[in-house]
Length: 401
Image (cartoon, rainbow, N blue to C red):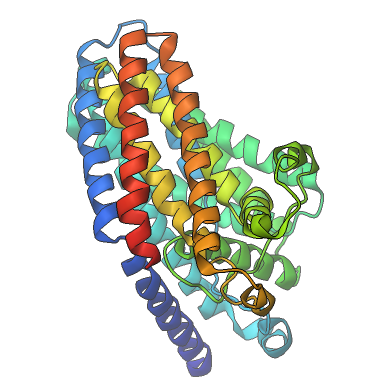
């Protein structure tokens, strides 16, 4: 028992050390400024939107879907490692205290997210229903119970081998959790909520009985844990070097046409290298696409027309800032240092790739804004071009030095 308790304590301390080590790089001064600005702007526009909320808006359904998704997505953070498949396998029957702590740890972590979601939805609930803030926070107690049950069901669902069974599990739980939340929000008769809760509890008992005598799915649990930590390490890798990140390369043959105009000569060596790296390696292209989509969504919900200019500049900055690690992407590749090419050529090629990526994003934003307000679109384009030039010539080059 003591060895198992000590094992969890060591794993937990190591987990906290890793998180703290990288979080200080992620939450740097620049990102803090962007987050504070985004939160302030989001709160302002959210309040403005609530003032114009139509009575026909399906607020209960929207809130139920959001809460249902948060409750249904309830993984267990086990902190298992690949070597455990060998060294902990003989102790499988003695690891119950370890996994109890893992459940408690997962519940506490996900409690914060659920609390933030309820706090964000509270003004919408009060505006739509005319109820009080105390009512929706009383609902939080029921949601916490659902969260605990879903963490258990997510754990037992790991035993499901068939992909369709896993998909069915997720959508069934999402339907039940969302329905329970919807009945609370619309103040439906108590029988509806009680019946839904009884079905959820019955499903939990069924999952537990179904997997009671089965051994742990070690490989699956370790795979899920590596995937969760991998997401965090890839995020941290955008800001600093993370040795734990494994290189991922995707062919993306359909994008080869973007490389055909690069001349096949020595002076274009780094043009080939950085453009192919941006398109095929890591999350650089995915980052550009994700932030562009997020920017378009923000432009759609921003009621203040000239505030769109700020949104455009903010998203361009976020994209440029998180693409800077591309400059040192090949720093540990020895053969790159053997190129008989001056470093200034490398810098020029990297800045060219970064500039082109930001201009592509700015063009997408400008075209989108043309459909709503031509003046704002033109002003956004002019401000964006000026910002990109200043950002690259000052901040990026200073970081490269």
